[in-house]
Length: 277
Image (cartoon, rainbow, N blue to C red; front, side, top):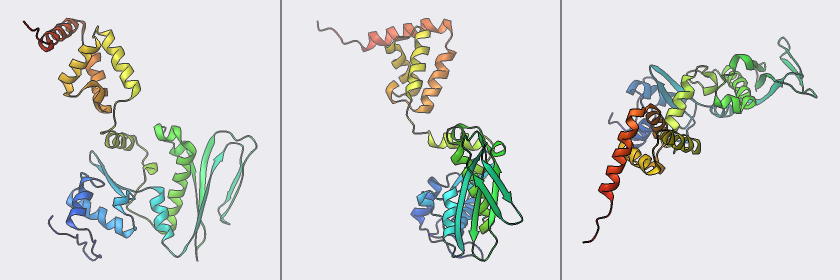
């Protein structure tokens, strides 16, 4: 598309110049078709979310596409509305005194002396001229049991409750947050996207060296093997390259060990400095 702006039928013009559009295509909306990009740009303006501040982004995993934001994205949109009256939320633990009177729009929540496991979270959003909006989400129902949820269980379930109540209070549609996606594909897609430039980790180095020793490879042999397979020095491997190297090393059979040692010896001879006659 050569135009400097994108026109949405019956909607206002989105003012992105060509360089900005190209940047969006190559970063926060990577992999989007032209139609998907138009929808993405429309929603970014509809909800006042800035792609360049990573307040809204596009994901594609297989045939599944999502236009993503965060709890903060929903909250930003709510706060721009003059009717926004505030947001409050808390995590409910086993042992708390907790009750919702749905008919009276009233929440009673007192922390227990000995708080046990997380049961869920509630959120209330006030909008002037309307009844309060209340949501409660069960931890058991929404816990995705992935790395993020295991590390930050309270923060994650609280975000789910806030997302639900903000969407209801302000009629937000067309966007999702990672907390709302309950399958493992998002986490895998997130890791794939964000770990491309991540360098090899300490645990990977240890595993690689242990595997090399189990194959009777010296450190020099390992370095030469790494350069041959990845055209990259061992110390400069990325996270994904290290994972691939571990897989390759684990697949080396006993019959291949002699070949590795012979190749290593050949390399040493070829690379040895010539004696001066």
